[in-house]
Length: 289
Ligand code: UTP
Image 1 (tube, rainbow, N blue to C red):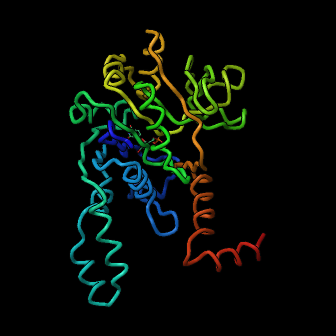
Image 2: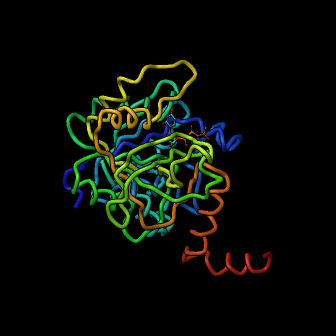
């Protein structure tokens, strides 16, 4: 299905300041939704979309992510010895989900800068990008939904979600022409607009399929000290040149797990679906609400 897209970049080098102090000494991408770290949901989304090469852009203090996707021989041996064969198998599976590569971003200068650190590993191919904290629960993986749009247009495409008007100031917001039930031809992008400036309430979610042209434009954005390099900086340049970009209102529920409330919602919803704890958790919720 995702024939043309072989690789995904997952930037995970941010400081996660919205989650301090929890993220002082551990990556926010390793915070658990019940019993699985957020980052594993993203790797599984890529794998379930047919992508088997994962490039992490990491930074200092993110070693736990590398370790999570590494082989854990001693742990597997211990679990097997204790007769916990199911768990041992589950642990073994994590390191064989895909092929992993790691590059470093020296300073968290923005997601755009993080992606440029992996540019040399991409060459002349399209590539998927998944932010390390945006989880979507859906029947068809969100990335696979985007791949269908990419196959059609061969142009950059990203996930869109409607947000309440009063929340637009948190997001990159698009204006554009609806060309089919969920697909938009993007005409305008405004990063963190006021309600008055916002061209719509369609916000960009951290899931993309990019072409090499996006990286060319990212590399041309002039560095401004103190300002983060956003992907939208490259998109704005492309729109100014008349290039086509597409947005797709995906089917599914999105959890912004880089945000306290977002992660709490994810834990509640996934907890209520989790075979082992759902009964007891529901009883607890009913007793307090
Ligand atoms: P966010 O902006 O949500 O992450 O970036 P952040 O900067 O860590 O969060 P706050 O605002 O301080 O709480 C989305 C993804 O991009 C990565 C993050 O690790 C996250 O997975 N990122 C962000 C980088 O890799 N490098 C950066 O310079 C910034």
